[in-house]
Length: 182
Image 1 (cartoon, rainbow, N blue to C red):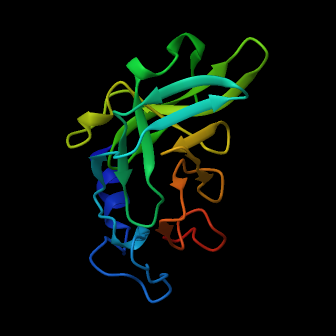
Image 2: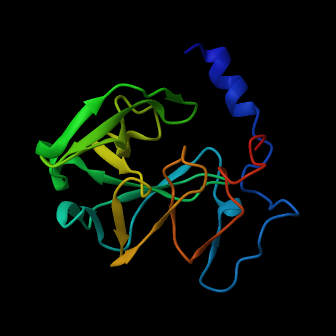
């Protein structure tokens, strides 16, 4: 990727977390608006235990997850490789480059009974500011069961992004119909 492409992609975002657009849902006490998340994104520890399951198989469990908060997107949660059954994970192609975090690739889950393509992703060489994502996997809640603090999370709408939607998160968020220009 050229630096011109990266700068153009970064500059194309109108909303950067300093103010909410008029169509944003006003958060109630205990809720977070995706429109208050910053751009460039922020990485922070997850305060609750995280568990990933495929059918009845525990694929990962950790209390050391981090989440990425990015304007207009549900938080994406990343688990350290050390807390994932990496013997069940297979690298796949099909990644690209995030204008903030760097190059990423997809991972499949193989349980013996089945293969779940593009179930997770990781940043192969995260860029400055996102080093905390090195040797971590983000899982798509649309592909595997993702639990945060014991509750199952919903996938971010649209199928492309890997955000984890909980009742505490309000939007609207990227991926919903009509959000292609955000």
